[in-house]
Amino acid sequence: MLAHHVMGEVNGVKGAWGYVEGGLGRLSELLAERARGLGVDVLLNVGVRRILVKDGSVTGVELTDGRVVEARVVLSSADVKTTMLNLLDPDILSGDVRRRISNIRSIGVSAKVIGVLKELPKYSVKDADPMIGHRASALIMPSVDYVERAYRDALSGSFSREPWISINIPTVYDQSIAAPGYHVFSMFIQYAPRTLKWGPEDKARLREVVYETVEQYMPGFRDRVIFDHVLTPLDYEVDYGTVGGNIFHVDMTLDQIFTNRPMPGMSRYSTPIKGLYLCGSDAHPGGGVTGAPGRNAALTVLEDLGLVKRSRVLNLLDLLTMAIKLLRT
Ligand SMILES: Cc1cc2nc3c(=O)[nH]c(=O)nc-3n(C[C@H](O)[C@H](O)[C@H](O)COP(=O)(O)OP(=O)(O)OC[C@H]3O[C@@H](n4cnc5c(N)ncnc54)[C@H](O)[C@@H]3O)c2cc1C
Image (tube, rainbow, N blue to C red):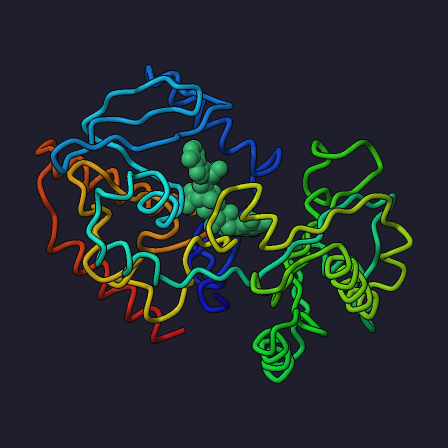
């Protein structure tokens, strides 16, 4: 997951991350507005109960309110296990395919602490501008050994006693997302494995560890917090329905990327069901707010419907280019 975090670019700056003005939810709103403008019906506050299949081909979806939407193509950005194991009737896929899908590894390892600050804390940096850490995403990750220790804690079934933390205070750039004078913060924490039970006492301990770590770099941070909320992989699973609580749906490990994502034989967005496609993080090139799996899946659908020319050679070239980039970083 670490390498994946620094790949890509924003406006030609390698490894940089972008910020969406108004917060990330604004991106979804803008996409929905654009889609509606193109005549798309966007249904909110309703889920998909079942994906409907007849004679090996998709025929539509049944919604949680009982309505049926007929379709010859269904793209799912729910994770692969939800899509293939929970939303399809169990007798549709062979036992072997179901077993292979259930064996895909998806164990969430990250947590989040978000909250509100009554004033902006400052980094304690010697002989440097104390605002320096606020100009971008700041990362508490002092050494490779530090990351290794954090990882080993997770291997032994706990969360990291000294986690690596990515801190963002987006109100430094965008005051529109908080009341005047206040700041919001968002801390990405690793490692916090889904395998933990995540009872209230685990959450309370994680909160302590996070603040103790942050205080070493931004003294007085905690005193400025007027509200906070801890999100664990269990919360991601329960609140967003992602099996395993993995923010990237399935693990971004070498054996589950490129042509093995989410598993060999299902890496070109299509599935064993004709007309059913995966378009989320568990499809190549994986997680993060990139839009890339969705775009690739949409192109595959257009190709399969004969609406655009198939471009397999280009896809292979794309894969090779990405592999070379990965080896160089
Ligand atoms: C706390 C947190 C912070 C993150 N920070 C960043 C970041 O700073 N930058 C970044 O690039 N990435 C970040 N990520 C990762 C990023 O959000 C994900 O990789 C990305 O959202 C995945 O997009 P997706 O469309 O594949 O799936 P998701 O965003 O997981 O969307 C899948 C959707 O399917 C819905 N769904 C599931 N089942 C059903 C059903 N039966 N019917 C209808 N809908 C259903 C879910 O509710 C969900 O809305 C973060 C993730 C989390 C959880």
